[in-house]
Image (cartoon, rainbow, N blue to C red):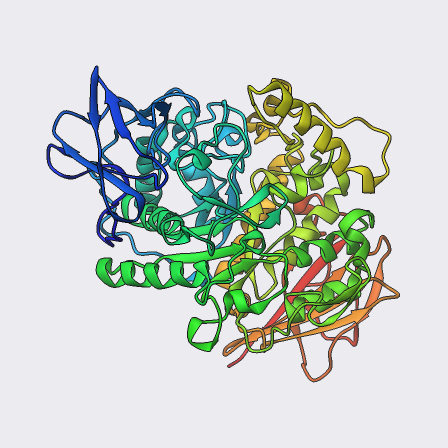
Amino acid sequence: MAELNINNRSIGVNFNNPGVAGITLWAPEAHDVTITFNNHVIPLVKEEHGYWSLNTELLKPGDTYWFNINGKQLPDPASLLQPEGVHGPSAAFDVTTFNWTDGQWKNYPLANYIFYELHTGTFTSEGTFQGIEQQLDYLIELGITAIEIMPVAQFPGERNWGYDGVFPFAVQNSYSGPRGLQQLVNSCHNKGLAVVLDVVYNHLGPEGNYFGQFGPYFTDKYNTPWGSAINFDDAGSDEVRLYFIENVLMWFRDFHVDALRMDAVHAIKDFSPKHILQEINERVAELMQVTGKTHYLIVECDLNNTRYITPADQGGFGMDAQWTDEFHHALRVTAGGEKNGYYSDFNGIADLANAYQNAYVYHGQYSEQRQKTFGTDTDGIDGKRFVVFSQNHDQVGNRMLGERSSQLFSFEMQKLMAAAVMISPFLPMLFMGEERSESAPFLFFVSHTDKELIKAVRKGRKAEFADFHTSEEAPDPQATEAFNRSKLNWGTLQQEPHKTMLQYYKALIGLRKHQSALKNTDRKNMTVATDVVTNTLVIQRWAAEQQLICFLNFSDQHQNIAVPSGVNQWQKLFDSADPKWNGPTSSPQIIDTETLMVPPESILIYTQYYA
């Protein structure tokens, strides 16, 4: 029987004792279970609660194997490596033998995280973890403190965003597998970068999903956008919960990952007395006590419900932070983006001011799109519990043509949007390539082998854009071209305007990291003034020794903005319209007047230091 062991993985095939493969499989409805490898066929012993187990010295790391359930050959649902893909045999892998050299690494305080979201397959031409390693110095020079890797759980083929994974423990073979991920994390830590891994616990992909043939991993009690929900509270759910808790602990313990970003937790259906997220939080706390290391749990959730990020002793699930899409939506509408689809609920700069002040735009108001009152109050919750961005994989890739901000907004507006994220009291995140105004799209792509599934995906993509009222055709997600077009263009680094944008982002991130008023995530140390007519914001931020004032002009005209009274003189700290950033004009170094003329689509930041 499997029992949770904080120190070692207890399901699947493991080598926790030297020379011995410990094998544990949950198959509660099976009457006969064997494992096949190297011409050996060995029966497993039935244990309590539907588990089957075996200890053998015959199975070695690197050997491929199959489980046979009632005579049917299946891969291991807890496999660590699928060398031949989702339909092939599993490979025994000893996750404990990597030679870690990151002993001096200490995770950053969450408030110091500056995220950089990337997709392994398209971040570099190689499309591997080694490719990412080769660009770590670039990311460090940019000022990034944490890379966030889109899901790496084994998916069908070699082209996928990662949210179609069907082996949550197996690291994608085409990315270079589990050893490659361990090497990448080790290198990141030795260079001073934290690693966040995107994981999916709300559904499993459709192709290569053999879970239902092992046991009740799914329940028909609830429907999700992907079909039956993962079984977190129905009959047999104890073992399903254990499976996913083991997965969380493995990434932290065996891969030294610093934080997990959990995809769409609003789609996790669990009415147990203790929600699965709360239990995960408790188990991670136990692990941290044992190891002395710090790990974070970050969730994507579209419910605007602070229960997810409220500590468990206050009735919450205890997650450390959450993605905040509504800041993005309000920012893009303010910048002149379209107001169709899910953007229809956002009304520009007033909502952006609301997002700065409340993290959520909807925190108890009526939502026309949802046709109900929506969201909860965020008072008293520190800014470091919210992650904000002007782009991410969803907001770019879920556009029909995958256009980035570089294709939708002017150069000046791109700079303003980037600064709007960096001056917030929240945690900033970049999406790969935005720092150099990347022109390549980020399209939706898959590489399924099931013809009916391919047809369904194509049909689904067309239906997804029905609300956006366009006559254009969605690119074929199955086509290799969609994947290749989505790869970053590293050859443009020394070309304009990419070169200047990169330098701009470096300066902007440096400002965030080194100015005490911007590093401060205390949301109380901020005021926001809005002028809807001129489409401008004035944001003041302060810390013990510094006060900042930020003038944001989202209009296409010069705007004369009132300077807050009570301060004798402000010194310019940052100017997005400066000619050194290919801007049109430079503003005064000192302001001691009652108003300031702010150029179109720009931000001016002035400071005063206290004696």
